[in-house]
Length: 452
Ligand code: HEM
Ligand code: HEM
Image 1 (cartoon, protein in one colour):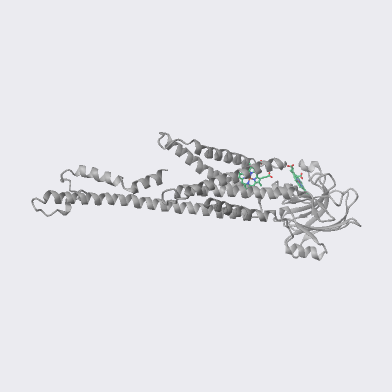
Image 2 (cartoon, protein in one colour; image 1 turned 45 degrees about the vertical axis):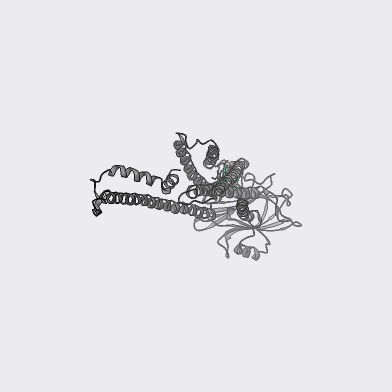
């Protein structure tokens, strides 16, 4: 019953994380919409690289008016928007309109992007086979964005119900020569196929990939990054010492098995994504991912094959299991930060959300650890004082017994802790007291809490 309610709670958590990802609304920002409204442009969508794209199309005249804007952070940078008449949206073959921001001025021109550009040859302005009118590049009034505004007349070469558009933002230029853009995942995703008449995006690929990457991140953060450490915390602090919680095992097993399942799904999705996006690979993230999956699987299997408590090498097995477990938690956090840096370069929400989660888990573990040691120290000392008390009591009883015949009053310094070494059989008495103290329940608690 209790197990089922945990599962419902976990399913609710997962759904509340995933639902916003499936929503497909990407309307433009208010300030950009003010700019499009001034030009009578009604269609507007947010794009990758923090860009926004507004367009108006007439299928009678085949005139396409576009307003494409994005931030250029540095003193120098460029913004490109273009059409590719080829079969798919890609950089090579694109006829581009490029606006360049220089230190004290701006430039705008037309460029043909060829495979030589990709190989590193200089990108210079050239004539393009597109009719372009009113082409301008300027900074917006209502927004910080730099914007390319133009009206194109589409020739029959361009299919208006399946048009390949490509865009890019770069941060270096040499006069009218734009210099290579950054090569991260969003710079590879800046292309799509749209239906101008209905205003829909046909190439679901980029959007789908983007959503799957977010799902991959969430599954990994929840699986490896949250549930596994939580399961470990429960096992360490709630098994017997400092707290004895009767349902700890049920909670521990659900955390570990759900964490491992979610993490494994996230890992498989990551491997698939890595193979699906043919432009980019992230070798460090991939290698750490494979290490995490392999060794976590080993840890899970090892629990079945662990030696018995009575086995001599059980203590070494414990050391190995704990060392590997803690090392894995460290590698998992590093890989999560790596994944976040691949996924979101501009927006820091993921990073801060994960830092918050890490602090919460770390702080909980730290407080419980401090509490454990305080309780341990207290119990250890309590036992020490209990031994002393028992010794004192037994010695004074003995003194009373031995002197009762002669009616002597017991001496206060008859306690061995107060240096009365002349007491008969003091050593034997001490042995007895130690044995008594060892059978106290606190002794077993200490052993379980600290060694297991
Ligand atoms: C300034 C000169 C440029 C250089 C040297 C350059 C170089 C490159 C290189 C080396 C790649 C990686 C290709 C791969 O791994 O397959 C790439 C990808 C890409 N570039 Fe550029 N690029 C330049 C300008 C542009 C411009 C102006 C645009 C937009 C109109 C653009 C859009 C893209 C896109 C969308 C990709 C993703 C992969 C693809 O579609 O082929 N690039 N670029
Ligand atoms: C410990 C947790 C994680 C593991 C084990 C893991 C594993 C992987 C693996 C194996 C790949 C394939 C890499 C390649 O073939 O190049 C991958 C790709 C990727 N991961 Fe992760 N990952 C983790 C966490 C994250 C997180 C938290 C995020 C983001 C929030 C993330 C974002 C990405 C992205 C964007 C890719 C590239 C996908 C693509 O190429 O299209 N990862 N991950």
